Image 1 (cartoon, rainbow, N blue to C red):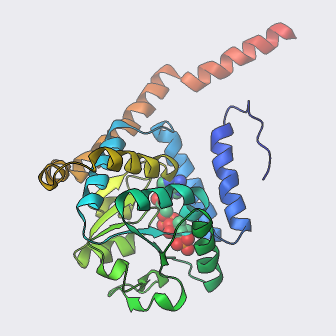
Image 2 (cartoon, rainbow, N blue to C red; image 1 turned 90 degrees about the horizontal axis):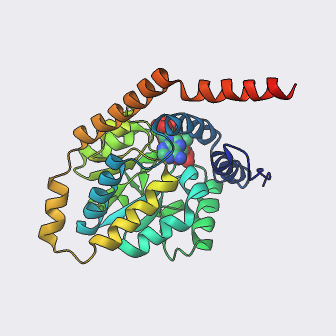
Amino acid sequence: MFEIPPDHPRAESLRIREKLIEGFEKGLVAKAGLIAHGRGEAFDYLIGEETTEPAMEAARAAAAAILLAKHPVISVNGNVAALVPKEIVELSEVTGAKIEVNLFYRTREREEAIKNVLKEAGAKEILGVGEAASATIPELSSWRRKVDPRGILVADVVLVPLEDGDRTEALRKMGKTVITIDLNPLSRTAQWANITIVDNVIRAVPNITEQAKKLKNLSEEKLKEILKSFDNRKNLRKMIEIIKNRLIELAEKGVYILEAAQLYEEMRKIE
Ligand code: PTJ
């Protein structure tokens, strides 16, 4: 892995990027996954690269939905396997949700590489690999239609991080509750899902696990109350507000421009 200087002002973001590049080199991540990550980075910049209050609210609702589910499934693609394999396994262990590999750019090699990474991270059972994905999601023409009859096909709640809109729509039409993690609050997936966590998967997956640990001992009734009080439309509006206010604040105060100007002044003094 390329060594990131620890004092680099964007060290954390560069470290995440390196994980993805490494995942690409290991055959986990699709070429388009690198492009998708760049889009995610841009939105992360806009939300301030930290978990916001609405994102934590959504993570709480997601944890409640997964705990209430009879057959919860976590769908894993290349980017998720490269960025948060251990965190996915921990979420699965805490909630009892199954893990299924489901790819847009499906190849047997990538399925196997992703399965191996998840196994190395401690997963005992991985669904959806090879012939195991023998069922089909109706109304879906992409490779994402191929699912495991023990997993996504019979799931009542599916967590689909970094998703494309088509499958979210198809899963909703099948009557499933769809939870997504997507940094873009305007994406079709974000708009179609029942619960959208507008946050980076790096932060969101551990947040769902943390919330699930807190909620685990609550009664079914209390969990249902949490779910009922969550409004995805409102939550998405709050996220768009956060981005709007952040941009207005930056435009008015010119935070970065001010920093650059100060630096320029310092340099002039040295000269
Ligand atoms: O591994 P595969 O074959 O299943 O392919 C996976 C990708 C991601 C290539 C595929 O699902 C795809 O093309 O997705 P999209 O349509 O590009 O959507 C990805 C969404 O995830 C975009 O809205 C991005 O803003 C968002 N995103 C990217 N990186 C992150 C993210 N959201 C949360 N955390 C991230 N790190």
